[in-house]
Length: 263
Image 1 (tube, rainbow, N blue to C red):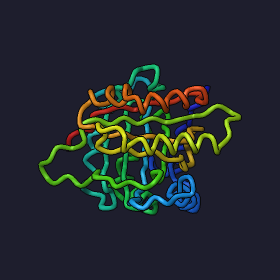
Image 2: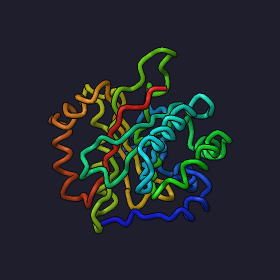
Image 3: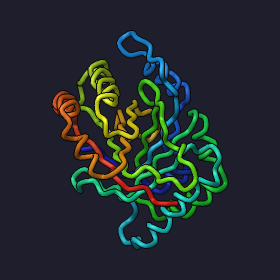
C-alpha cells in the first residue's frame, strides 16, 4: 500500500499546491518527445499542452462548508490567472474504494509546462494556498504532457457556454517488476483508444513527471458531456480489452470523478 502521508511542513517548504507537482522541465520535455513518437511513427496532429492535476485530502474536523468555500474560490481564480487555459475543480464522487480519501480534485491546463511555474507564483494562487494549506492533510500531484499531444477543446468555451459536464481522472501505480517498456506500450494503446470511443469530449493520458507523484506513474483524464457517459466508456469493448491487459500489471489506482464547479 502506498504511503500517502505528507506533513504540512512539506507543503510549506514547497510553497504552493502547484509546487508539489513541479519537476525538472527537462524531464517533461523528454517525455513530450517520447510521447510524440509511438511505435516509431510520428503523431502529426499533436497540439501539445501541459496538464497539472491535484487531489486534495483535508484534515478531519474541517467543516465541509469551509472546504467547499475554499474550492469555489480556487475555481473562481481562473479568470484572474492568465496562463490558465482551463481550470476544473470539483468534489470527488468516485466509488469510495477508489477515492483513497481524496475529497476534491483540480485539473489545470496550460499551453506549455513553464506556465505551471507562473501559475504557482501568481499572487492570486499564493493567496489561496495560504488559506488551504493549514486545512490540508495531504495531496497528490499528476503532471504530464499528453501522449500524442492533445487537439483539445478544453478552455475554448465562449462566455455563457456550458463547461465540460463530467470529469473522470485516474492515477495508475503498476506492480514492481513490470518493465517500463511494457507499461509504456499499454498506456500508449490506452491513449490511442480516444479515436475509437465516441463519448469522449476530450481524453488525455500521460506519464507522471510530478515531483510529489507518490508513486503513481501514469495519469488518465477523460472529459464527458454527462456523468452517464463514464459508464458507456467503461463498458465499451475497446476499453474493456485494454483493461484486461492493464489489471494484471496494476498494483492499485486512484480515481477522481467530479462535476466541475460552475464559475
